[in-house]
Amino acid sequence: MATACRRVLYVRLPCWKIYPGGVVYVADFVHKQRPAVDQHILDLAVVDPGERKRALTERLRTLRPDIVAFSWRNMQSFGPHPEDDALDVVLNFDHSPSWRRRLGAARDAVSIISDYVSSRLGNFGYFKIVRKLLPTTRIVVGGTAVSIFARQVVEHCPKDTVVVVGEGEEAMLSIVDGFSAPAGEFFYKDNAGTVSHHPSAGSFDLRRLTAVDFAYVDSIFPAFRLYLDGDIGVHTKRGCPFQCHFCLYNQIEGHRQRYREPAEVAKEVEILNKQYDVRRIWFTDAQFCSTQKSTDHVERILDEMRARNTQVTWSGYLRLNHLTPELARKMWASGMGSVDLSFTGSQEMIDALTLGYKLEQQMAAFRMLKENGHSDQKIKLYMPLNAPGETVSTLRMTIDRIAELYALFGRDNVLPFLFFIGVQPGTPVERVLIDMGYLAADYNPLTFNPFLLKRLLYNPPPLGRIIARAYLEAVDSMNRGSEYVGRATMDILDRELTEPQIAADAGPQARLGERWQGRCVRPGVADLS
Image 1: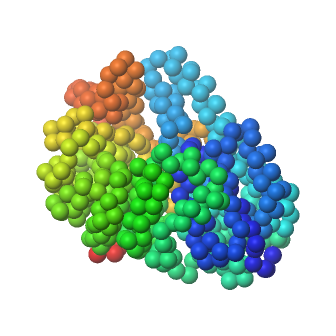
Image 2: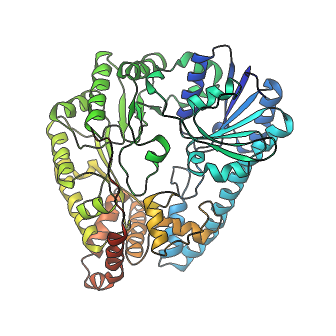
Image 3: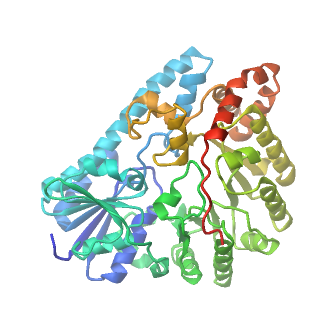
């Protein structure tokens, strides 16, 4: 197909119910550049599982699109979300003192792995339906999961499939225009079945992303209004100059931060708020503010939102490196509903994971937030417990710092969220763990092997067992009407880590920390202006 297309069908592949912002931005951009193209969005996330194939088939037969573009959000089983209790199952199977619970967890694990396998194979099955019904229609596959595993995904796709890596706007526009002048980064399986890779010639200019035309989106996306009572994602920038050891944002979006016009961002929020009665906004950037330049950009957005009198509660992943009292006041005044950020109470772990900030600077920023308008908003701490290099000593430091935050904000307002590092391909943590022998050099990151899947959720002994049992005990106490599970877990850890035997058992963990520190490659941080 060398001619420009007339009709595009976007298909959001099944996942939990979360606003499909990526598809919306791409469809809106293509419409503004090529208004004659007829576009439609089918969201399989809100279609009953038994009706999904029928819904897709019906749309294909009715619309007969020239392009079908699939959006694939998540692909690995350890990505926690509201409809997935895989973490609880793993912790019970590996660490529960009750053999009944371990047996039950094994049974649940079989079900989870079965769903995991059928979900992935089912998604590839949707591609085959398109190819069977519409042999000349071009297939496009994109989304966050595909950006990480594009090379593996393209091998399983039908012929004449474009697998887009990272940003989709320019790539999709070039495909709509006939694909004679390809843009963006992608893998392509041609009609002969040969796979080629096309690197991106440059980053997309985000100033071209004006406020979304939601009236248009509403007209092409029947499920749009089903999301309006939840968090709506709004993008303000792309790119991340930091190189945290477990994160792929800088590979997917690039190291250089690029910005949308603050007035357009605020206009987008205003339209959602005043025309669609949206009350909650989630800023979907890798980090809402991080460098000095991006912090200035955030301040301009908040000024624009206040000038437009938007009545929303907003949140987003924060860095507080460049927080000022004035900015703190603007954050609270514009509706910041919670403080969401990565947290570890040990500078040693911050350095080991190359998180790129100073702990004392972060603690000073917390005090600044408290002194400049905090009332009862939640402080959400996303804590990579037992990450490579963690020891009893660093874990105790984290517990002590959390106690300081309880005293500062009030215990009920501090929510520790516990997670374990998910090993992603191409990250520094993956390379070091292969070098240390934790993973085989030729391991399959998309394996269905449950034992390898567990290793990709990094929680080694001896701390892994201690943390897991503390969490399971906390869940039990929560079920009896106790407080928030994250706080209860940290209390139990505080108790357990005072036991004399813990220090004696910590030798292997300390040695692992030393090996990590010795082998850890710490790349520099770029573009921090």
